[in-house]
Image (cartoon, rainbow, N blue to C red):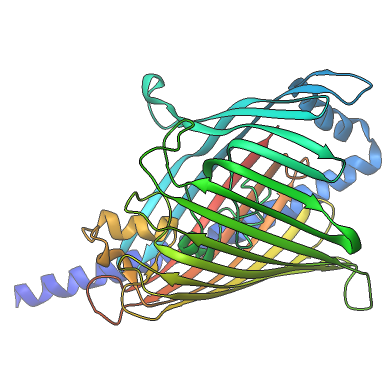
Length: 404
């Protein structure tokens, strides 16, 4: 009888803890929403009373402008600072953490027909002597004419909707899980690229890169991948004020180096539309698996609503499916739960079908240069192989994003 009572008490405690965690998530979201709306109202009132405060916030970013002249040459500091606080409550376990997401610092400049950039990625979660991670941007670009630019050395290689969106301007704290699965998350590779604007609002970018993931500039001990992207801006009509569709193709000479995903080809078509205060973004992508990775297909739809100059609401649905077992990875903080609870093997972190629903709010203090983000996500992973990849959980994230 004592044993039964102890078991009942344990079960009651677990249910109570899970209920308490869920309640905390709901309360946190409500508080974040209330604070965002209140802050937006306060900011709007301040702007009506005086423009001086807003101007002073904008002027604070002038510290980065070290030099410029009438010919358009300049020399500026560059960088970004990002902080995350995440709470995950899932059937597989819980995870709570507050950490520096990114800190990068460097400079960029322009002299005549040439622009250049050098930026370092620094991990503020480590001690000072271990803080340096790698170089990100380390390149020189040559403007062949007013519409065409040739870029050399280490640079961002973006494809898919969120993969070609800088972390400085993402509308959610983390990139969607379609991008997380298909895109090469090392992001910065040594190579050469060319981008150009064409007639009738067409543009393209293409390049070839070493898959060497060295911390600095390097093309040794690796293979290569090639990328081609094209985009078309659409004329205004009754359905949208602004519209753009784009297409990305990547050929990857897969190599056991861990710096690119194991897909020999990736195809992605994405779109962005805006009508008054409403926006809509989408991505449909497919990857041909290699080196043990199965083929993968995914869809993302992301509607937005601009409540005011300072407040934006964002929703997102993500669907991923692999042709074979263990072809889909979990997102950033969901995978941390799996890692912390002893399922850190490759198959233990993967399933074959993934769905996610996200709802969040952005408060723009100084546009994307300083913003606060809060979002609640529900994610579910099916694991047909039944080898530890199943997942079902909630994730609430609060983030601060700044760049200069």
